[in-house]
Image 1 (cartoon, one colour):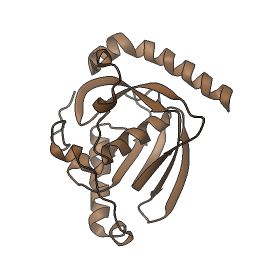
Image 2 (image 1 turned 90 degrees about the vertical axis):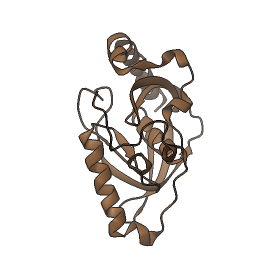
Image 3 (image 1 turned 135 degrees about the vertical axis):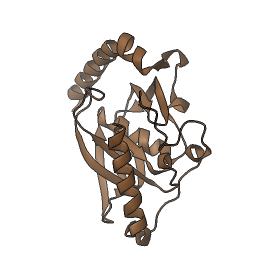
Length: 195
């Protein structure tokens, strides 16, 4: 796996600090537009599903998500590029948790099981300063929860509920990916029955 020196790695203090919210004036600034551009280039270069600003050493409350069809995320649906500024997640009522095998560009070559909410509501500003509220459910909600955790100073490793689930990326593919795919199918079927 490609080592990424442009992304803060586990142990760097910037990953543990809560990021600061941006004013409307800052959202419109060229410096924030440059940060967003750098984030998009970095995420795509390293084939991430998302990236938080503090992962590129910028302590501001911005994250991006994008899932393109590829081998690494073959169990997730495509998500077009979204820029989320000052995002806030609200957990929906009558929600349930599911297991997510997660990895992170700041924690290279490691995967572990995290419990994530099935359905969230997220409010944020886009890069034009428009306020947006979306309801996100299913597997896609993982990516949003993971990225907003970064902005609050948390890594997925903080939320791993069973340390024996920690595996290298190669061993995840070799030993656990097929089992996880079955769990995801069961999860998606459960969600379909509810809605």
